[in-house]
Length: 269
Image (cartoon, rainbow, N blue to C red; front, side, top):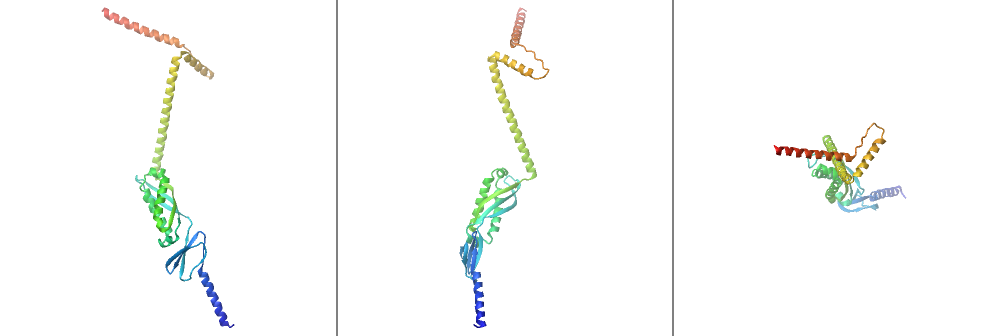
């Protein structure tokens, strides 16, 4: 064989290898390859090994993995005119590779912009208290709105979470004072309830002791024993209750007799 023939064979082999290299495509399990033939979408292929027509076909890889995107801190004015700084995170993934390539130029950038504008819009319609308390409801609302906007692009938003809400220093101090006042109010209410229950118990005890005079004497002796058990210089002079009652009776009799004498004198005059 002449050198010209060998050179031609060698050139043909090189061209064949180049064509095969250009025709072979390998796509990972988490990717899909969108095939364009002469500018028209053919299909999304993968995963694995497949062939395309060199020069005529063009492939665009699209990842199907869930993408985590941090929404930058946004200055938001709530419904009750309080300025807060909020940042969040969103999770989304491509569910339709063809639409993610054909319907939008850059689905990741577009999704991030939609997430930022929706965050400001939704939080501007809620009060500060709802923002701090009902985060789950707000997260669900954000996810539903953003997912509805990105669905035509073949993008599925699976989760949106508010990460942090930064309040102004003045607002934090005001909320701290409010919480302190609320704790003091609860303490006073609990103390008043305790006083009311104690008064009711004392009234019930007084009724029992009044019905049983001997119980009062036993209670007096018990109190004297408790005081005597402590090492102190307290002096106790026990006075029988009957003596006090006798003194009250005598004083009442004297008052009545005094009024009677005074009335008789006036009549005689």
